[in-house]
Length: 450
Image 1 (tube, rainbow, N blue to C red):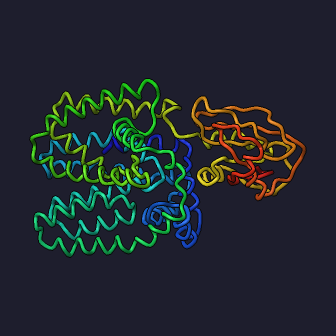
Image 2: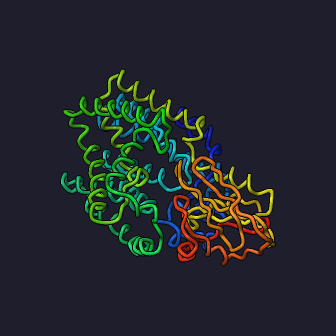
Image 3: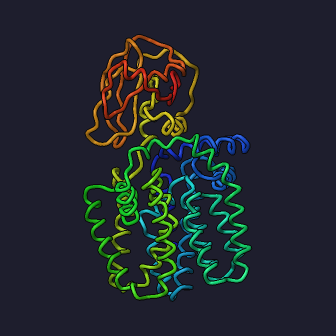
């Protein structure tokens, strides 16, 4: 737990907030009523995490550290819960190995440092599984309902646990399952509304192969990687995981966690084959602790030590390597702030909140002669040269890791918010002006303060 705490808290404010965390910051800075009313319009998850983070930031503030510290606490708390699951299923030694996996996992450290619902979701589903093992069905129901109120994908972890209780004819299971079902049904109208109104443009280009590759790799080496870590890390940790699984294959104690984890992974994947793409490392995070416990049952000192050492090395490399960190919105905005400029994001819905978070003050609107258009891009992406407004000319383009931006200058112009809707295009393409004028993106920031 001390190691988990150190890995999560020591660098908690090191990285800039990322795009989705900007929405959390918006919610935390509003009145409670306004915060809850924003959730159906910008979020794809239920309200419990946002209500808790709203309360949390009233004590700890809305700095990067304050916003993320609730997730960090959940990440540290998950370690003894994983230990207790392993100890209850098999032995304290298995629990210790699984807890060590959880403490140093690059994926779990990443989500423990993200101001989003994922780590709380993982903690609550793990607590529910622990209560299942201990036969505390009403505590299981309470933890399961809280997990559902945190993330809809908790259903994929809770459903196989409910089926197992019915199959084993656990006393009072039907009433507990009925209560959880009612809690889920109460969230259904919100889910349907969010599915209809909250954009998920990132999912449009995904294939099932992308989902499988991204989630499996991220479970091993985390959300970001560099050339040195990516393939070697996947190969080494993949082989170690296979060796652990092979040694645990005859251990009946591994069947329940492995079965629940498999259900929670396969069902969303099957849904992706016929419908929307929802399989992501965050959405599947509830399966991670159960996989870790099942693999720990096949651990030898050598295998466990090697896996822990490799994961710890990758986790420690994160703060040292810019390529393994989040997009640096903080650095970009602060670098652009000294001079009055108009700032435009290409992904207005996703990136505008985090840009607004880092702007010191919008200031009064006033004429500007320079505008900066920026957005996320992959290395080698094309430079955007289409002017955002008539009369402006392309001056230069540069890149800050995963954010590329183009600078345009022209005669002084007052840039009202509605003018931003004219800016379109992609950093991967150079559309013609007529095509650009037909595709809308939204405003990121301001003229003047900036």
